[in-house]
Image 1: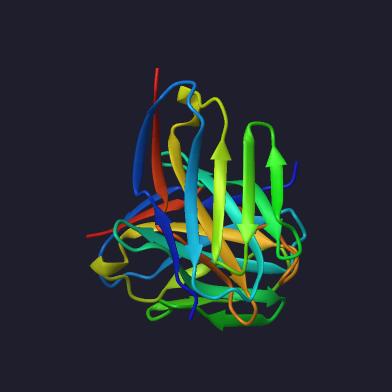
Image 2: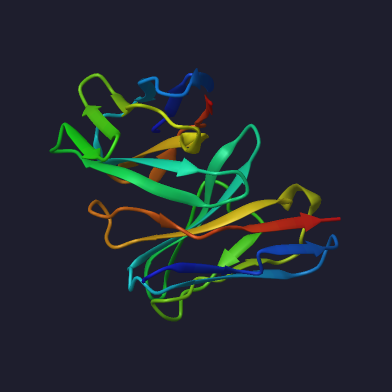
Length: 111
Length: 113
C-alpha cells in the first residue's frame, strides 16, 4: 500500500527566499505525482502534475521534480512571497490504486 | 470555465439523520471522487466512480454511499449521520485513470451534533 510523507510539516521563511518542499512515497509504480496548494477553508488547487515519464515540470516560480527510483519529489519555490503562504500537499497516483495524499507542509512566508 | 460545485458548503445536522452532499462537475470527466479531510488524518478516500453506474469503496467508506446516474454528478449520502462524520468533505474529478490531473471542489463542512 502506498504511503506518502512530507517533510517538513511546517516551514517559516522570510520573503524572497528560495525554498524546497519534500515529498516521499514508498511505491514507485506511479502514473503521476501531483502538487497542490490549499488555503485555509478552501479546496485544493492543482499546481503541477508530473507524469511518470517526466523528470520535472515548471510553472512560473514553481519547479517540481520527480525521482521514481528514490521515491522522492521536490517542489522548489523561487523568490517566495507572502502570498505563497498556504499548505502544500503532494499526491501519488498509483497503478491499481487512486491518488494517495501526503499530510502537507504548512508554509509561512514572512514580509 | 469548467468547475466542480459542491453544495451545501456548510451544514449542521443531528445524529441519526440522513444527509446528502451534492457534487456537480462540468469538466465532463469520467472519474469522480469523494474525500474527507480531518486534522491528523489528512485526505482520505471515501468512494469513487470511474463512470456512469460504476461506484467503488475507498479507504473509509463505512456509513457512506454514492450513486452515479450521469457523468456530471456524484452525490454522497450519509445514511445515519454520526458525530465521527463531522469533517470537511471534498469532491474531485479527473479525466481518466493514469492520465488525469485531479481537480477539487471548494468543500462541504459538515457538523454532526
